[in-house]
Length: 495
Image (cartoon, helix red, strand yellow):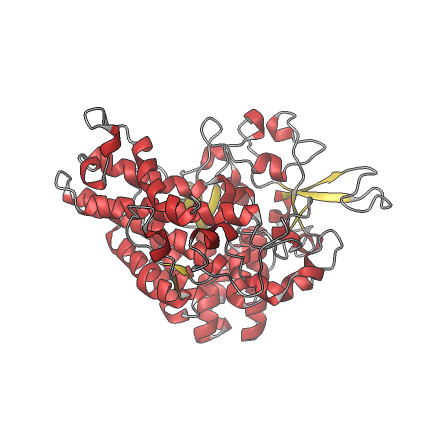
């Protein structure tokens, strides 16, 4: 049986936290580590949760853009199957990497939850907070997994032996995973997490409230989503930054900045964290211009993950300040696909260009926003519009538009406002962790991709209805002797 995910993820969850610990473990023989003898001190408990956080910034999850790949706002210069849907099948390597990274995060979170729950030598308030953080992370990983892959094994405890692999390969319906794990974990996190970060980058009750609202929105539960968003909007020092560009400066990460309506505010609520000297953000070269990249002191980009022309055309290019986060670069006689075309202008995404100076090896320090205040406002506008109509919803979308420098909305029907919110979420949150999941929850992914007007991606010609889910990696199906099963429409072979 292959040493693939269901075996390695949960075991790796325990082994990886050992590597993250700063505690001296030399007194315990290294072949005798178990959850019962590892979780001895508060430092061990914190190390376990730190290990789970590491999965949020996993390379494969972000390098291939699960939040934007294969949508109406993004195409891949190299015709990646995730973008073009050509060759997207059960043997597609990137699918396996994404699946493995996310399930590894589940394994780490489960190890932390079980180990910390059984600890004796830990302050009770710290235990409660660490468990809440681990449950938030477990819910976050499953939120991504189910929205990408559909029905999946529901793991709530560490896997302790390879023999358990096949027995655990039972696919639980998505609705049950939401009801039994994602929503209860997030409800517990909302109740137990503090309003201030335990340390830089850890989650707060605001992050849990916003992710809980997203989970409800995904299930079409607008009433509960609306209530959850009350735990974010108007709370503490949260608010919209006055300057959109302040959100994409390395020096402003985790800092309060001048707010749109005065005072100092935090707009970032939860980020995937990167730093040049530890785990650099590879978006500097994935998205950066092939011709030049001034913000990395001359380092070349690859111009691979690029905005579609349709996305560029969503903006009022004269007045919308957000458009300046997408900049142009002429490639002369070089075109992406057709050598007969000349002087083709390309747009490169500027959001993750490290502005702090040189980016060693073209790896930047800019975080990727997963949850921020503007996201909460736009979700609130959508939920309120569904529940009570447009008049009550304008107050949430219009501040986002006002900051962008475009006109405020009024006089729309319910359907017209929803259409405006869909476009506004694309403009405001583009190339953050949202677009693909937004399109999926609206039921718009296939229609949006088929409607692309440009010829730089093969996506419109190739996307099929079954592509709303990604294929289960064939290696995982093989590891369970076929018990795990495949999503409809996919078969092994190809890549």
